[in-house]
Image (tube, rainbow, N blue to C red):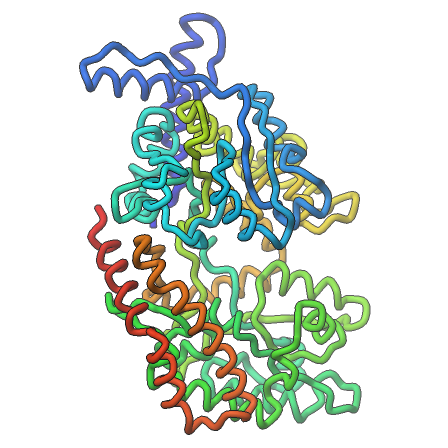
Amino acid sequence: MKNVLKVLTASVAAASLMTALLTGCNGKEASPDASTAAAAAGTTAASKGAEPAKEVGFPKSLTYWVSLNPNVAATMKNYNEIAAYKEMEKITGTKVDFQHPPVGQELDQFNLMLASGKLPDVIEFGWAGAAKGPDSLIKDKQILRLNELIEQNAPNLSKVLAENPEFRKLVTTDEGNIYVMPFLLGDPILAVVNGPVLRKDWLDKLGLAVPKTLAEWETVLTAFRDKDPNGNGEKDEIPYLFSIADMDFNHLFVGAWGIGSDFYNDNGTIKYGPVEPQFKQFLATMAKWYKEGLIDQDYATTDGKLKDAKVTNNQLGALSAYPGSGISRYTSLTQANTPGFKLVGAPYPGLQAGDKVMGQYTMPFTGIGAAITTSAKNPAEIVKWLDYKYGEEGHMLFNFGIEGESYKMDNGYPKYTDLIMNNPDKLPVTQAMAKYFLASFNGPMVQDKRYIEQYFTMPEQREAQQVWSQADHSKEMPLVTLTADESSKTSSIMNDVKTYRDEMINKFIMGTEPIDNFDKFVDTIKGMGIDEAIKVRQAALDRFNKRQ
């Protein structure tokens, strides 16, 4: 994937040249983004043989519905308090009425809002979770098709999509609609953010290497169980914390058999992992580990707080984790009681040494973005306002905040200040970031890899990310779009399948259901209609692959 920063740099160069020309004419400096917009408008009009279109301005005001990110909610009540949005209001003159649904009720409130017909101007959402696909929402006249609006009023985003055709393919539906100003990952380094970690200090104490195969993992977990690596003289170690949610997210262990735990793309053919024969082998291995005490006996009832307690009490040997909320956070939390605590990222294990297996990977676009509703009276102005974030000024503002406050340029590199990295109010880095910009979560923008390069302050974080990046990502599903008919046919099927699948995975692993009943498990899922769901996703993938 082409580095989007190169695209933005090219946009800025062109804009800077226009700015210089305008400054020379009237002695006043013009905004680079405004200059680019004017040039694009004139070019579009000229190509049609018409008079140059009158440049669209920024809106005076707009209403904007968006979930309140937890890191924002920790210190603020509204996105208007974020420094980047404050600065954007000064630059554009646009006053934004942010509307945040109650935390935990986002999907319900989203559905109620669409059903009511009382829509704000902008809805920012993870649209992959919408009951109806974007094409249907456009046909139902709830959100707008943005293709022409972007072409005419969003030169910065237009440039990004033109220079990165894989982005355009992802953000365009099967019917050719662009429906959001998208959140895009600007570099592959941003796509891998989770994987297996182990207690490095325990490995060192026991003279063990980081495991690379399932057999090596079993050896390590057995040693964690039997050899008292925490040194308290008690057999209280928990070798590994299994989680169905983690398994779905990063394919840990199940990927060793070349399958996923959900739908996956096997060279253009959609398959559903739990009905594949290899899933039985995965379940048998996890059941064996559970019976032998290598998996946390209480894994099914362990929530976030209990997991934290097991880590900080010096009991847990291995788990799935993020570099930030896992490796960095746990290292900080355990410093007082366990000074030698150290985590290490491990490769996704295969059946044999050298196997390249499935691992966590996030597509550059996952459906997150800002849609403009049919209630908006000035969609062209809103598109222009949103497009500001894709130009150099907006890119820097929403990835790094305010120059001189939250970052300073160091030999051309935007380096976060101690206000972010060592906050005087003792705020965690993610909360300090959230006070100034959006890079640590998402929004209609291109996320900059220089954010994560600095967010990963520990070498263990950077090394883990590099190790996890070596996994096989070729089977990851792109963001396919289902038609309204396809969605209605399969949504209830998949709700039932997932509920049954999760229940049975726990029963198989805990031994309350014999592995010999795996064929009955498969037959039950097939009886629920999984073949129809696979067929629908196959058709959606085929349509996706035909997109230009």
